[in-house]
Amino acid sequence: MNFKVATAIYFVTLLGCSAQSQEPTPKLQHAVLTTPQSTLIAQGIARLMHSQPIAVADDAFINSSILVTDSMGITDAQGNPIMGKQLSMPDRFELLIKDKMCFVRHLDSKATEPLPLVKCKAVN
Image 1 (cartoon, rainbow, N blue to C red):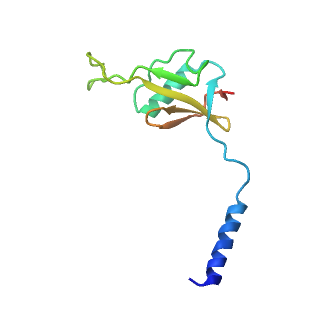
Image 2: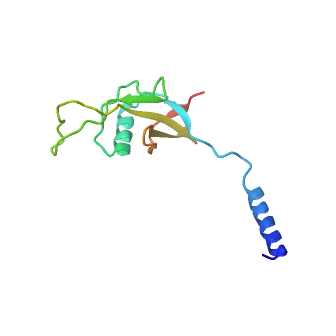
Image 3: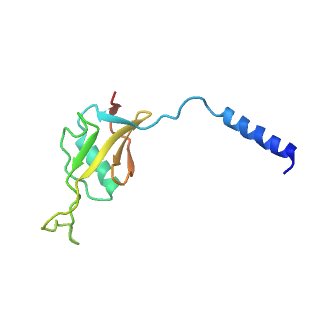
């Protein structure tokens, strides 16, 4: 490669990097709800897990950014729970916030779902 071409590429790359914003990209932060919003949380988890809404306690995500639920039960073709031993581990979720938008994340899969109607605040 020609020295002049290599030098030009180097300076263009250097200028491109320095032209980027010096502000750090906001990251998802752990959050808690400002008021109980169990219905919206249940709907968000259902969208995230591609399941029917689950029962979520009124104090979910109020005191902690982590929620542990019974594993999503196995159901038959009609949606009725199949009785028997459950061998799967409980599902764990975390509430997160970025730029005033709340998200719920499944801790095992890292799948994340936005919760546009949910009001939460960052945990300090």
